[in-house]
Length: 89
Image 1 (cartoon, rainbow, N blue to C red):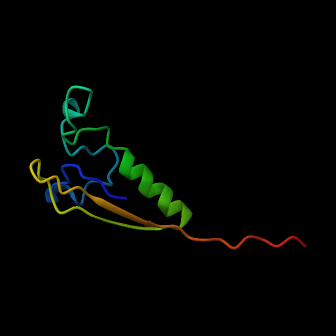
Image 2 (cartoon, rainbow, N blue to C red):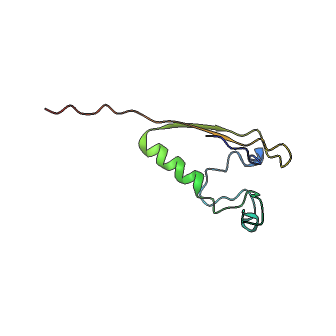
């Protein structure tokens, strides 16, 4: 999955999967009148990572940095494990 947002500042790359960590001010979270500026509760990425770990999935991500002019976005990659179905006996 990828987006075309403002990206993630390289200063925060080690912190984005920490619960309740916010890369921006909550007051700057997007609404109908403002654009997303990096605020939020800090639970989306940590929750997704925990779910992926529990299912045995592999994941990776990259974000070239934060830029409100170029909108470099971020990319997240997931590889889900396949389980062989049981044959009826």
